[in-house]
Image (tube, rainbow, N blue to C red):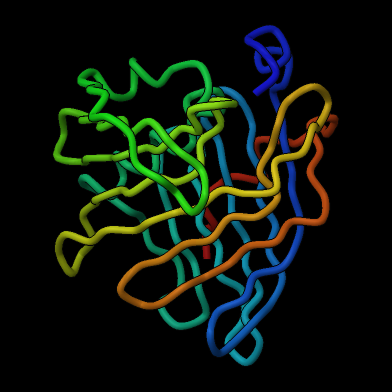
Length: 203
C-alpha cells in the first residue's frame, strides 16, 4: 500500500466520483478523518440524498424516507470498525483478534491468499489478498441488520498512488439487492475536515 510511514502520515481523506446500479446512477462522496470518523454521501436521482456516518462514538443514517436514525447493536460495531481511519491498513489484528489463512483462491485472473477474520462480536470477514503484490482484491463480510443477518462482497480494482498510498478507485459491491459499482475520479489526503462534517444531523 506504500508502507507504514506513508499510511500513518495521512489523517484526513476525501474521494468523489459516481455510483451505478442496474437501474440508477448518481454521485458519491466519501470523507474520513483519524482516528475514527467517516461519512458517505450518495445522491440518488428521484429520491434525494443518502448519508451514512460515524462521528467518533455514534453511527447514524439519514435519507428522505426515514429521516435520521441512530444505528445500534452489531451493525454499529461493524460501522465502528469501518470508520477506523488506519484500521484496514495498520490495525487489522486489533479489529479482528482471530485471523486464519485458508489457502489460495483465484479472484478473476489473479491468485489470492484467502484470510478469514473473526471480530469476536458475531461479524465474520473473508479477505482475498493478491499473492504477487499483496493488495486486497475482494472481501466477503457478514453483518447484522434490522432484518437479520446479511452479507456483502466487495471487489477492489484500479489502485492508484495518492500521496504515497495506494487507493482503489473502483469498488464493486454485490449483495441480495444487486450490484453497486463506485468509480472514483478524485481522491485526496491533503484536506482539512472539521469534526462537524461527521456529526449526526439534529433534524
